[in-house]
Length: 190
Image 1 (cartoon, rainbow, N blue to C red):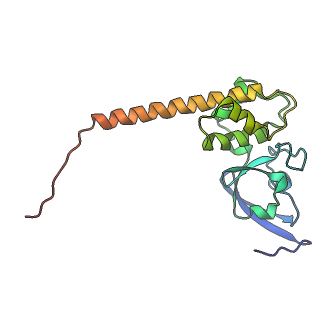
Image 2 (image 1 turned 120 degrees about the vertical axis):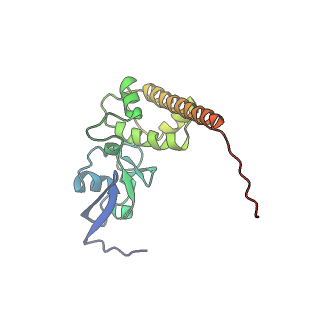
Image 3 (image 1 turned 90 degrees about the vertical axis):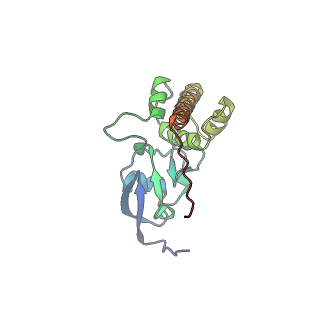
């Protein structure tokens, strides 16, 4: 394991939303602070700084994790995704963000970035969750405004939409394969 002197600055390089980035920080700088202050990714919010509220959730190598419980130096060479990376800066919202908007799944918005990052990871791992499963996943986040019901509705809507799109794509591929003539050739030595 790499030894890091606690009283010196360290340059941490990582992939932030697909872009190579780096900045200097103290050894004990939290990833949440490094993202906000060192790299300007202010969509990551800092709430409790104890890993309880979930506002600081980001994805580290594709897995939702609390950035207030991770040191910036631990993220060296890793892929970090924040809410800013869910859609292009000038592009439309992601399907999940748009569903949050449609269902009024945010009010003050403080917890929203962390919840979106957890939901994005969760739907990749569990594409067809039940309402109870979504509520269980959300139990790691504190939201004082929405009562969670609109968030659950948004997540379930996107799971259904993605499932329907995947089923339609599979049916289209199956029909395409059935319509294609299969030619069998024999190769025999003469």
